[in-house]
Image 1 (cartoon, rainbow, N blue to C red):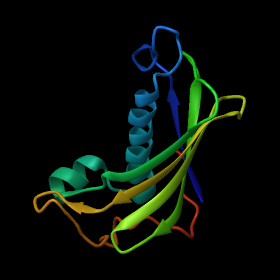
Image 2: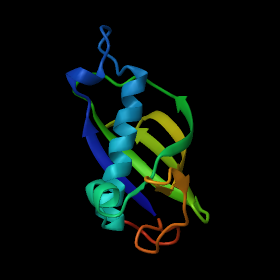
Image 3: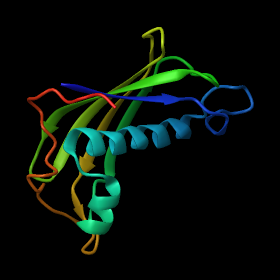
Image 4: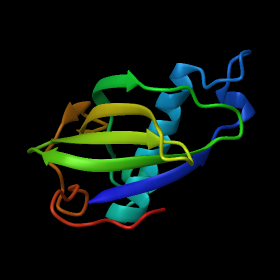
Length: 138
C-alpha cells in the first residue's frame, strides 16, 4: 500500500550548512504527491489542473523532523494513503535516506478542489486515492 518517489537532494535544496532547508522538504513532498497521482492514479497534475479544472491542495500538514539530509543524498518519499473521505485524503509520508534511516515523517491532508469555484468537491472515481490496494513505485 506504499508508493515510493525517490528524489535526490540538490544544491537548491540546501542551506549554507549543506543540509536541506526545511521548506524545501515541502516542495519535495509536493513533487512526491504529484508523482503519486501521475503513476499510481494515472492522472498527471497537468491533466488534473488544465484538463479537469481540479486540484489537490494540502490543507493540513504536520511534520516531525528526525535527522538532517545533505547535498547529494537520495531520499525515498514513502506515501501511504490512510483514509479517504468524500473530498479529502489523509496520507502519511515517511522520508528515508539510502541507509533506511528516517529523515522526517509528515501527515498530510489533501482536498479535491474545483479550481474555478475555489471549493472542495467530491473525489471523481478516476482520481479517488485507493486505500486498500498496493500502488507501483515511481
